[in-house]
Amino acid sequence: MQVRPVSIGSLVEQLADRVVAEWPQGRVRVAVDGADAAEPGALADALADPLRVRGRPAVRVRAGDFLRPASTRLEFGRTNPESYYQGWLDEAGLRREVLDPAGPGGSGRVVTRLWDAVIDRAAREPYRELPGNAVVIVDGPLLLGAGLPFDLTVHLELSQAALLRRTAGADRWTLPALERYRDEVGPAGFADVVVRLDDPRRPALVLT
Image (cartoon, rainbow, N blue to C red):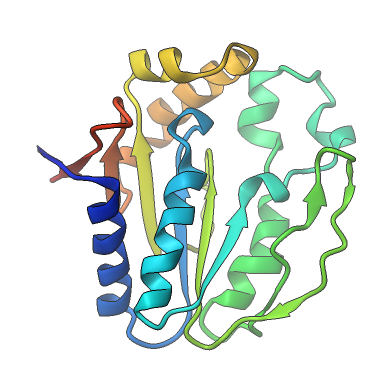
């Protein structure tokens, strides 16, 4: 295994080049997987413009907009690591409303926000038609290993010390779930792209 320093700017350019090279036609589904402390949404946002410059419309989706209702998600309390690990993300909804329609043979009609967790109600966002060459970028924690159909997977890796250091105090109850994900699922072992982010100012690509 080798580790190569890379800037965020260079990283998103490389990712955009890879998408265009490997999928010159058709829609592409990209996962940017990482704990909240790794800020996967920031990398996903940064990837959108390089894709558009290359003629590929980018559509952003946050896993946080596909959470289950509070009655299900918080059944065992607001700070239950087991529930966070297995029961927060509405994987079926994300697949039904985004990933399957965006995939080969899919309808191309997607909803990018399904549930508003703040008010605990359906987001009521209308369906939108994806261009035939759109790139859908989904970000969030715990996205890999459950069979969600992504074409390109990016995992943002944090060491245990960095995860502890960078996780906000109010969110530290999620640490057992994130550590379980690392140990049981092992996303760093199979993601297409692994980025080590112990120091957000000095990201590095992990090469195998």
